Image 1 (spheres, rainbow over the protein chains, first blue to last red):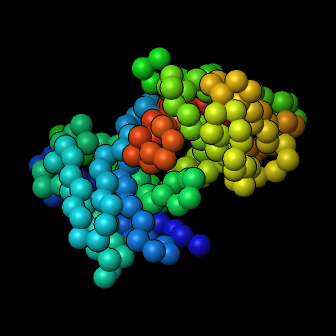
Image 2 (cartoon, helix red, strand yellow):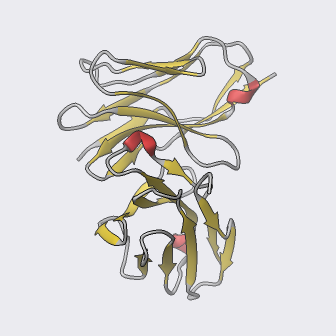
Length: 110
Length: 114
């Protein structure tokens, strides 16, 4: 069945460092791909999305490119901030549900 | 309301006790979803409603889990005879029909079974 695999955390970086969180997927067809973020004490929020191969989703300085050839959707940010500390989930929709990865916790040190 | 509201935020239940978790979706959102998020894991689908109709309950882990949305708005997830493995955060989300990126999640109910 469809699935999403993302790198395990926690990931700890200093402020202004470059961030990559890896995500690969297994799916029939070419679904949309999402990154969700969960800040402490808050609900999941959609961070960005891409709907087809080679699409780049971007939001709040984060980017991810839908790579069909490597079945990947890695999340990147050029310069992280303390406020980016959260849990990040890679996800894909299938039928009436969303399939999530296990999440990657990110800690940014000032 | 402005967002999806879930109550209670925290619930501690003794093993064997029945619990009821409430979700108030965004007004006008036809679709409502329940997910279970175990510690250190991603959310996993439990069930889906479109208005009052429960269209998919394939994710409910056992017949101790029951969800309803009788008037197509507020939904309740009920767990009977709770067990320790039921300990998790239960997330509710609502959206307009057919809108994956319109999902709005609530903050969840953290259930701890002792």
